[in-house]
Length: 119
Image (cartoon, rainbow, N blue to C red; front, side, top):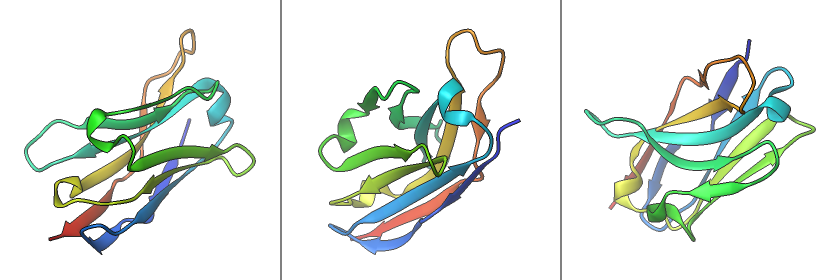
């Protein structure tokens, strides 16, 4: 069982920054890729950024150069540093743990944290 607890959302002006944190229980990072998704009202969740157990990182094109995903293995915490925020980044952000190939597990999700960027 994996538990994910997010923090760090809030209200910020255009051009501002926020850092999201996701604290994971258990030996998550060795068996799971950690990611951040966001969801707009009435839309499917979209993958924003992901970091694999081996450290490979990927981003959706719309956040490249502005967002940075990182993880602290000692703290079992993954971060999403969001800079140069835009109103279109306004969404609920979810932390995700996706099992790597061969691990008999499903995905785990955090509770979500609201990010609102005012224009």
